[in-house]
Length: 81
Image (cartoon, rainbow, N blue to C red; front, side, top):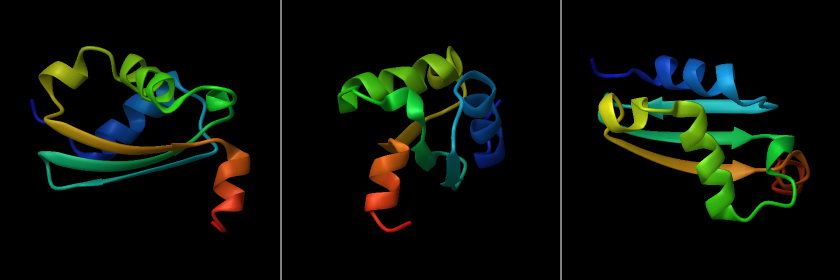
């Protein structure tokens, strides 16, 4: 099974509390903007690991490529969004 952008959004939201969650993609490659207070104090790699953990085995089976921008709520506000 190949995941859709809506599937990926749902998978992440089920396992990671997000203030903002946007996912776009073409069925093979996806881009995500994930804003979560769970990222407070975490380095980029740790943030990405949290998202991969939220996706579980789906990252190996259903999702070919996922680029993500992971921000805290404060970073998101500072970016002017």
